[in-house]
Image 1 (cartoon, rainbow, N blue to C red):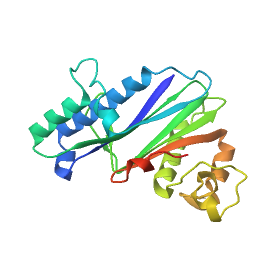
Image 2: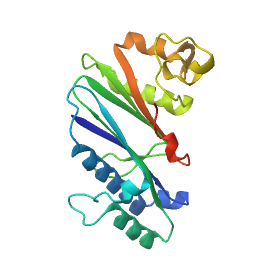
Image 3: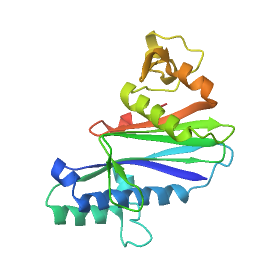
Length: 213
């Protein structure tokens, strides 16, 4: 099983968002979320997805090498940086063999950490099912994530959905972000993968917008 996470940690200024201490806090939140995810029972035949609100996220252990909770680490970071910050929410995804998770962060800012932390205002995880490992999966996953960030679908939908009307909020029937002459479904179908779910985060949106039904 592989695990992935998105998390939203808010600060008040761009100056603090670029500070290494803030980025270390975000890294601790990421590790705490992944540890929580990994400790949950696996669904061996399919993927699983979950969300943590601010209260749930705050109570998570900070990690195997750090004492206390994420709430404690938040208080320490606020004391050091002198700016209010909040642990807003997090999402996690676990997938078995036969699934792939594509990711994209808009305006990505890479943190100098061994965990390849990426920060930005918008982010997406796209869960795909595929019968075999394909060479282009990483690029395909990034493009699907770009579409989710840019087009903000509310659900995956079906390849049979006709464009227009309510289908405009369904991912597969939306005009493909990078080639509006075709739908996203028409782009995906020849790739040998099936899009089954996604998560989209945007800093500033409410917690209720985190889930895609």
